[in-house]
Image (tube, rainbow, N blue to C red; front, top):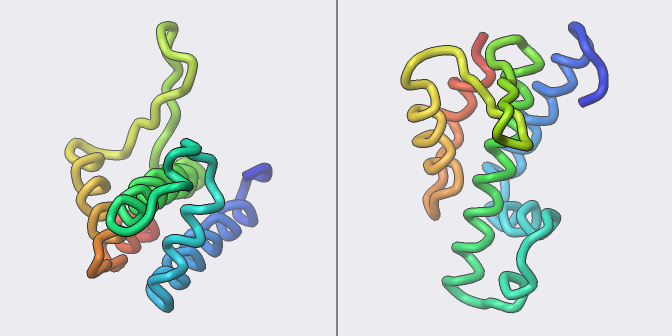
Length: 125
């Protein structure tokens, strides 16, 4: 996200909500979203259960990235730079938040997916 301020925050909420709405409306969207992200060449060649698992893991990663972006835009999370890592590490608002986020992400990408916990955790101020 490029902007800042109320407009940028509103845009990020719309993007995250729209993504979760699409997942809820059509489970096949999960595979299509996952296919848009770069992955291993071997992942594109797999079929069946392996393809589902590859898509699930990619979608979980993508949802995590968008969730952290949304939380950061609202000021509920921040990025912490490290001298030893090349990427900034997200720091979330409270103890145990990462665990709750992990459970909510798992629920959102499960075969019988549920996005309600992820919506509440990320979109509720």
